[in-house]
Length: 423
Ligand SMILES: *Cc1c(COP(=O)(O)O)cnc(C)c1O
Image (cartoon, rainbow, N blue to C red; front, side, top):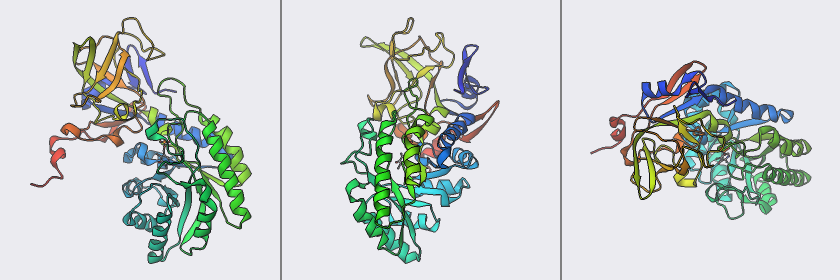
């Protein structure tokens, strides 16, 4: 169920009026639905229940402490890609022994921090990283749990900037090297081989890339076991699709149908690292129209959310549904199709860059200065990628639960902008 619904001509998040929140806290404002977040997590958990999966929510999708806390209370585990994210997971009260740590550039400091916190496993992305982990574990008198991140050379058919599982990407190690690498781990008293990891990119809307990588994972596990290795974990990463436009993404059930049989055959534990599919449609970004102008034969709706708030359109040409909070035309099914009373508009922000837009040539109703706009599917890779570019202050984040709500990050002040600077 979509928690963001129009009722009596205005948008609600669960039972809370979006315009009331925007008035109380100002714009831009991020509004999240607790039930959506929790339900998306539960759906994945249930879809894969046959293999009792460990769902490591990918912290980088949305790392707000309250969101991590909520997921932790649901029994979720976590996938981190930096020491900072591991710190957040710990601050949220989660058990760090449930944390998987990926990333191609783990520093000594980060490796040490992870070992001190007894994480579940490092997803190791290079041979020099294996050496560094071994050296630091030895210094600390510990044995480091590692999974080999292998590049399965599978095409996730997603944006060039977010595909990670094709040969030649910076991620993981060449698939053909698994034997050699596993031998190296086994020969090292400070390393313990937990299993193998693959993450093919994001968002992957279809199931076939997962079928391909799960099959490769099964074959590797078999081969390694034949050689006497204990390989008990298959981690297939994250990347499940999100319905940004309509229903383009496969469901958790559909992903499970292709993945589970391979995991059962391998007799392995399954870890997954979904981020986007859990948080994405649990959040919206609300902005206010500042001006509407007509120049060069175009209509520009200039509003107070910008690429510093939501960079995805500028960075990945991403599509987000956008519609007024109190619309004069009911939201269409297809936001890209021509619509009567909705001539095309560019929806742009105030930042001094031509790539500062949330949408281009989009059928859009007439709006005026002061109207509120909702940008949907903004719960993942929204705030986490935001910045203070143009010395813009980031807005409030609010978490809605039924008819109640609370601020989970306050709006930044001008003083916040200069707080770390020294003159
Ligand atoms: C980014 C990332 C994920 C999460 O991807 P989503 O699309 O948010 O599900 C999972 N695993 C790794 C290693 C990642 O880098």
